[in-house]
Image (tube, rainbow, N blue to C red; front, side, top):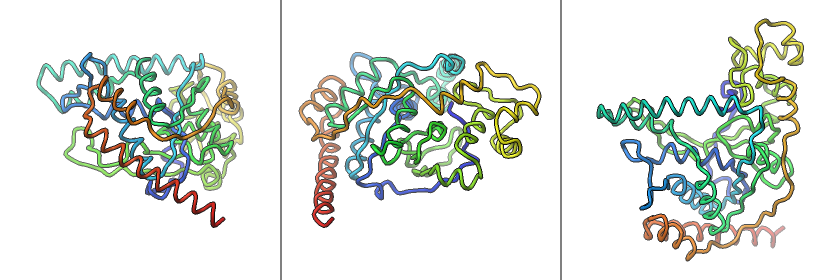
Length: 344
């Protein structure tokens, strides 16, 4: 779900090409779910290999990563670890949504409502263990670093950005801000022309940057208070938030009373599945690791072809073409880096 701060935070649209040379820590699960939802047949069926295993996530991961490398961007993928116990309610909520979508998807297929079937199919996406392992294997062969987070991938990506090991963390969710990310990049994996559900209307989705310093300045709050706003609205650890309180109301309450504790003293009916102090503590001090190595290597072309084309039934011609573009972009980026170093 992620915290709903979209109506509050200022955003700046950006052309990805202007981020050449930048390092981006990507919330891997967030990206893979996007690929699983979007990359499907017209009736909602995901891409599969000859053994029946889903490959939509690999298709998105490979071609999107090649695009980033072609632009001279250096991605790092951060994978989720063990979710905190207090996320159980959100996990159960998502599971129920998928089960309901499964039934609606099957019904739409039986009735021949193809467009409706595809819409429901996108809501049924599940990230299985083999998908994460296949993704890591592909990234290793592409020479792209990945990190196994001990807990939440967004927290680890934000940590990399705070340490200066990445210039941006990338996710669709605004939780990265609550975890303290200085710079958040959204729409990295879904940018482009997208069709609106149930409408013959297409919209252009462009990447956008959210800067923590600008958010705090324009809202007139501290990072602690931003977390308080998120908790009032609802996070992955208290998905329902407080009934009747949206982002704008939450902002007004926090600015009026100063702290979450004082807000809760002055409103009625506030119930939480876990202690809100625990939620705030997790955002302030999440479980992260410094045990990682960041190195970008030349792609193992033969290894990628063996894996994607030999095992996963990808088009060898398309894979070769994408790799040629990626390698060309990497060479240009290296040349620019060398020139920059030479001229200081």
